[in-house]
Each structure stands twice: as structure tokens, then as C-alpha cells.
Length: 482
Image (tube, rainbow, N blue to C red; front, side, top):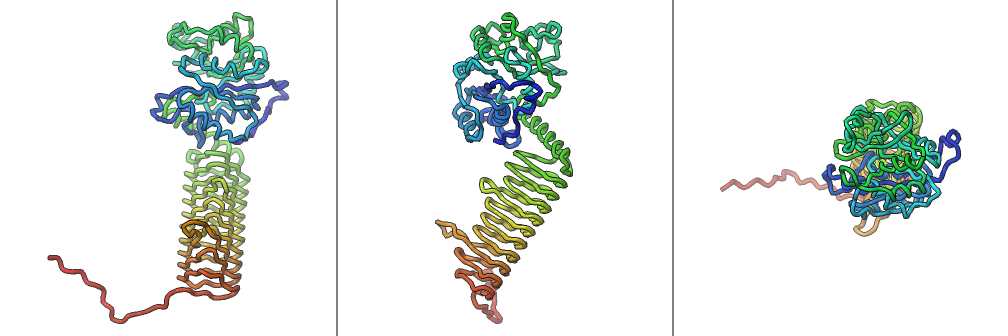
């Protein structure tokens, strides 16, 4: 989880209150037609619920209470993995079994909530609410009012309507319970609210299920607030993506595209040149310096940092990597640093069709060509492996030329061993360097050699069978069919 925000508007909105977040994540998601709990389906490379947890972290929440139900064990494990101890809030889980409505869900969280905070209620399947929007909602609450996040919706079918008397909010009426007149209202409730914890607890205790759905509606607390003389305010936005939920694969795909369009526009506003903003996928954190260019159909995952003037060719997949200034990544290159990361030095040329695996550390002006794979290896400035080669668990010196078809044999069936190729070595084509082995500085390895012992600096090393030619040799002939 990458936490990037704090209370950026605190100065404008006043003293920051203590915030506790309740996330409703108990639903089955029948329309997803999947064994995976709905809130664990991925958007931009992370679970829907992971996005909501990150938003809670950006709010500097004191406590986060996740309400689980369907697939509870799986959801709770995913939450723990998603946060990974990198956030400061206290993470709690409560179960909603059976599931009797949104009000019933939040009732389960009551024992975990202190009375002194403002509770922000979010949904685990609404992933793209921005922290700044919630800051303003919390400010509207002010610690003593019920604040609702609302939206003007051209087609409000299925949503709870905001019923007002002038500017004063009087109630939220669910669609199935709304009159014909109320169904003409286009201001809808998003499902997100900020409410004083002590008042929330009182109102939750008064809920009943006397409605068309026979469920306990969280929205009924609005009428209780009005009856108690507590102010009910609405913070209205015009950005439907921020409150869009996911109930089907179609909605998930639509929200994915909306997210990616926003990422593309953000990058272009920062000066990145995108060949086509509709054909880029950012599934993590992509940081770009000036004059970066990215061709079509590239995917960025995890943490990727592109230096000044970096050029990314078409159809590349890059994950957990630092690519330094002026490097060129040619088309169809796959870079995946996983936990160890990958570093590509300034001015390096990579690809096309190259693969850099975890632990690849390439210096300045290194060349890695087509169908070359590098894993857990360091290549110093100016080293080159241009064709059809493998470097695994290797330390490669400056200006080394590593021949086509050559490999480091780094695995003996039980353990990995390291190959050291010192500066200015030339390795011929189709060689096997059997680790552990060191090729001395300035040495040359003749093509087709299998090297099993250390070589002296400056030496020519050749290890291959003597060539034999048999004159007038006839190939075996096929036997005639019976």
C-alpha cells in the first residue's frame, strides 16, 4: 500500500478530528459470477478493497473496521496482506452473519468504535473515492452533524433519493420505498457518510426493518438525526466515478477504463508523451521525470520509476523497476523486479524481446538485446549481451561482450552458484560458463566452449571437442515400406 496523502486541506477546513473508518465488505456479489469475494476482484492490479484501505490510510484514520461476511476468512487475509504493517491505523474485523442490510452491517462494528471520533462509512466495492472528497465531507460533519456524500444522477434508478426541505436534508428514501414524486429526485445518496460516533451508536440502536426489503437500512439514521435536532448536511459532487460501485464484470471493466483514463491524463499533465492515452495500463505507482515517452499497450505494475528522457517501446510489461535517464526500452520487453527490483542504468538499450528478472542491475550504457534473459546479475558500464543469451547469478565487468547463445550454468540441481566475468572479457558464441567460475579480466572464451575452471587474465580459453571430418560419409537411408 502506497500512502501519498495527508490532510492537505486541514488548514482550510480547521482542526482535524479523530477519524475511524468502517468499510462494508460482507456482500457475496452474486452478479460477479465468481468464487472470489466481490471486494477481492482486482482493479488496476489491486483488490477493490485494497483501494478503499489505501483511502483510509490517506485519511490518517485511527482505526479501520472491516465488516466481512461472504468469504470472510479470505477477505480478512487479503486485508492483512494488503496493508502489510505499512500503515498506522488499527485494523479490526467484525462479521455480519446473516446479512440483514446496511444498517445491520454497521451495527456489527459498534463494539469496535470509540465514542470520541467521527466515523466515515465506506463500501469495499467503491474503490475510487478520492481522499480530498472525504476531507471535505468530514469538514462538513464538523464533529456534530451527519454529513452525506451525494451526487446528481441523470438516471437515479435504484439509488436512495435525498429528500430536502429547501437546503435542509430531511431523509434518504430507498428507491423501492420511494413514491412516484420522490423517484423524480435526481440527487442520490452515494452510500458514504461521516457521522459522530456517539450519535451513530444511538441511531443504529433504533433501526427496524419495516420496509419493502425487510432489511435494516443505514439510511434510516437520517430521520433519527432530524428528529433529534441534529443537522444533516450534504456534500454534493459531480464526479460519478468516485462513488461508482462494482456489482458485475461489466461494471468492473468500465471502472478499470475510467481509472486508466485518469492515470493517462495525469501522466500527460506531468509532461509524459503517450502515443495513445487509451492504450496504457498503470497497475501500481508510475513516477516519470521530464520528457518520458511511452508507446502503445504498455503495462506498468508495482513501483516503476522512469528517469528523464526514457523511451518505452510498444507492448512492454514493466514491474518494480527503476529505469534511469536516457534509457531506451525497445518493444516487447518484459521487466519484472518482484521483491528484489530491477535497475536499468542511464543510456542503456534493452530489447526488443528482452527479459529482465528480479535482481538484474544494469549499469550505464549496457546493451541487452533480443531474447536475452538476465536474472540476479550485475552488469557494469558498457557491457553487452546482444543476442539469445542467459545471464543468471552473474557479476559482469565493464565493456564485456557476451556472445550469442551463451549461458551461465548457475544451478547444480540443489544450489545456485555465481559466475564472475571480469572487465573487458569477450565471450564467444554458444558458450557455457559452469558456475562457480571466474573469467579473468581481458580474457577471451572461444566460441562453443564449456568453461568449468577459472581462467587467467588476458588468456584465450577454448574447451571443446576436436573437430573430426569423415570423407564420403553416407547418411542412413529410410527402409522401403512393406
